[in-house]
Each structure stands twice: as C-alpha cells, then as structure tokens.
Length: 588
Image (cartoon, rainbow, N blue to C red; front, side, top):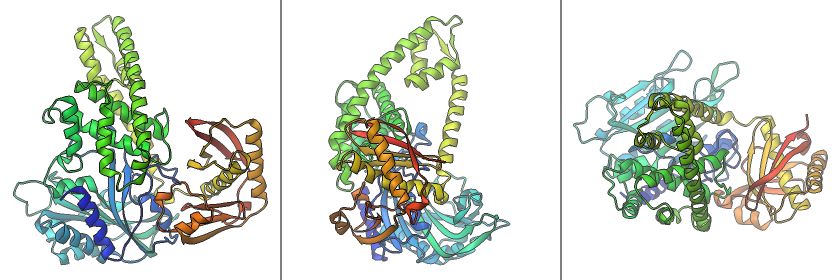
C-alpha cells in the first residue's frame, strides 16, 4: 500500500468515526517555546488538551509534520529519520479507552489487513501510586490479542509524559508488529527487536498535583500517534524504511546522480535523502528559517552540510545542481498535501544552493586547518581535541579526518574522539530533553503575559513602522520574548522608542482581551491578522485586544492588558533578508 494511500485511509477511517480532520501545524511551532520544532502530533494541541475548547469539537485527526534531531547522528540506519509525519487521532473529553483501542485494532486488522497474530501490546503495570491498567489489557483480550501477547511494563515505557512532571498524565498502550519472516513466537518478548512499535495510545486520565498526589481528571483525553514512515515500511513488507514508497524514487534519483547503486552505499544515500527532505520542510516553513549558527537555523545548516559531506563520499560533483534535482523529487511528493512546499519552492532551492556554496568554502578552510594541525604533529598521532575541533568547527566527520591523516602516515586518537563526541551528544540530548520536558505544563503566567504582549507589539509595529509589517515567528520563555517580523530596514532609535511607548500605553489602557469563534474566511475578511493561515481549520478563534489588535491564535492570553507588565525593547536585529527580530523583556 503506497504511503499516500495509507495517509488518506487513516484520515478517512477516523472521519467515519466522527472525527474532524485538522490541518497540520507548521514544522516550526508558533506558540511553544519548549522546543525548536514540533516533535509530535500532540504538541500543537496542548491548549486543547489542557481544556480549551477546540473549534472543530471533541474528536480530531490529522497528519502532522514533525522534526526530531536528538538522534541526528543515528540517521543512516534503516529506521531513523529527522523529519517524519505523525498520524494522530484525539478525544478531548469524549470517548476513552474502549473506543480508542477498538478503533486502533479495527484500522490495523480490517483496513490495513494486518493479521492479528502479528500484533502484540504493552500496558502500564502500575506502581505504589497508580494501579495497573488492567482495563486496557481486558479490552485487548476481548478483541482477540492473546494474554501471552500482552505485557505489563513500568512507567518508563507506558506512562506519559513521566511520573515527575505535574499536570495531566496517564498510562499508555503501545502496539507492536512482528516484522520478520521468522516463525512468530507464541509469547511477546519486548527485548526481541523483531517486534517493532507502530502505534501509541495515551490515556490522560490523571492530574499529577503539586503535592505529589494523583487524582482522576473529570474530563479525560486520548492522544495517539503513529509514524507514517514506519507503518508504510510495515505494510509494504520492507525491513529498510528507505526501500518503501516514501523513499524509493528519491534513492533512485541519488543513484542516477552518483552513478552508484544503493547496495553498498546505503548509509550515504539514506543520509542525503533524509537530510534534504528535512531541509526542504524547514526552509519551506512560513517562519522563514534560514541557515545560521543558532536555534532552527543551526539545525538547518547542519542538515544541509551533512548531506553535502556524504554527497562528496559518493563522488557527486558538489558544484552541480545535484541538491536541486533531489529536492524537486521530494517536493513533488508532498506539494499536494502541504501548500507551503509549492508556494515556497524557489526559496527552498535558493537556501540549498546558497548553503552549498558557503560550505564548499568552509571545507576548503577545514582542509587548510587540517594541514596546519598535521604539520605540527611530532609523534605521528593526532590528539582527540584537534580531531574533535575539525568535526565541531569545520564539519569534518571523523572518517574524513582519519582518511586524510592516513595518507600522511598519521594516526588519529579515534577512541578519545568518540569519548568527546559522546559527551557532546549527551549534553545536546540533555538540552533537548530539557526543552521538551515542559509538555503540557510549559505555559505559565509570565509566558501567557509575554504571548499577549506579542499581539500588542505586532499591532504597534503596524502603526509606527508600516501597515505591511507581519509576524514571521515568535519564541517566548519566562525571561523574555522574541518577535520576528517582516521589515526591509533596521528600525531607527525613534521607531523603537515609539513602538515601546505605544505598547505600554495600550497596556495601561486596560483593554479587555476577548475571544470569538468564527469561520476562517469571515475572520480574514474582518481584517484579523494571521501568520500561518494554512494551519488553521475552517472555524477559528480570534482574539481581540480592545480596538487595537485582532489575530487568529491558539495560544494562551491574559483577560485584560492591565495584567501585563511594561515592556522594554532590548535589541533589534536582522534575521534574514526582509525579516527583523525584536527581543524584549518586562520591566521589573
């Protein structure tokens, strides 16, 4: 079953169960400072999982663009990807375990025609705080999953988000598929890698209170997620995700460009295919991300440069338009599902081309640095610090350093490099974990104040700078707000001062903040501001601040501007061509 059919059948199935399809949110989150990218289908739905009514009702489904970069260096094997699509369905205080599990089973066995004997599940085994999820286990048994194929696991495996975080939480049940031609074991062994997880259903039935107790939620939610890449490989009977219909023509294009076969060059071709696809989606995003040394721009730069390094390994002429040819194949596969791919096609190609040119120069500089280091080596061995510096500063993979060194009769401290690299990864992962741990509890009072203040800042810039100013992105923490906007010139000191004064004047005016639901076309016709029009459903929420601001938005807001402290603009700078950035803080 081809991957577009799987995506379409998933949506059709849940629509038949009373769900409304919601559009995919952008890959760069609009109102969530806890992560650089949307990493799961639930992330854009946080306000609704917290209790805010959704314009589309209580049963929702979608396919969401996601990016995870914690394991970027793992990409190159048969399963890892940076960009992926997550199929999801949600119940916001509507149905619960029985319907969720039954429908998952029905979709897998009746629509996707997976034999029951190839399925196994895990459920929460309970602890001294919360009892075991025997209810889910009994539902699975009733549907035909034998007891030996149901495993009870602890909180590390079957609890979301984790036992430490306060807020909505609960057990989950994970569904596994036996991906092998071997005889299927009678008993499910979670350590047996032939069993692969294909779907996760989270049941948010508790609130973890500040005092450490867990109480039942009056309105319980269901949050599910199934990766399209993995389920496509399963349904197409391939053990290598890159052999599925998602990747087949992309890999063929790389074979054609390199004049090499996939067999024997799997790792390099997988990395090129994956990283170019991710770069396409990041650079096509309405947030206008460009390669840089920070945040999303750093990830974009790293992806493109890693793809270039592996293209060189395949002896591809880096100065040719190889990246454009691959990107065009990828864009043709997704443009009918994601409008920004079609609309920003030229931007994507320009980003890839420009970064390729820059990196070619960096590689040259790296080679000069390598030669400088090599000329000073006395004992025939390059130490770990220099090897890691070539990797971290000049983008040299250890393989390239070893290869160049061996040509000069120099050995490299590879073990020392691996230790430094591992420490570097752990720091990166810890940082990523810290960024994501906010989950449902990421938005506090200060973040809510800052978010409402971005609406005022947007409106003030339209008055002081130009009516053509539009928001291009925002990032909010408890310490500051960052606001990106369209503008072709550096703000003068007078413009900054007047903008700041106008925002603070509106704060003092104690304007009420009101919320109205209306049809999207009516909201746009009324003049309401909207950054990511394609992310909103047909019925939208419009937040009005007095008579100075009206915006389509799903984020949290104060009830009155008097609840916002005065702001101070600390910095104004360029982000990319035609996009400026303001950093502001509350006056303590």
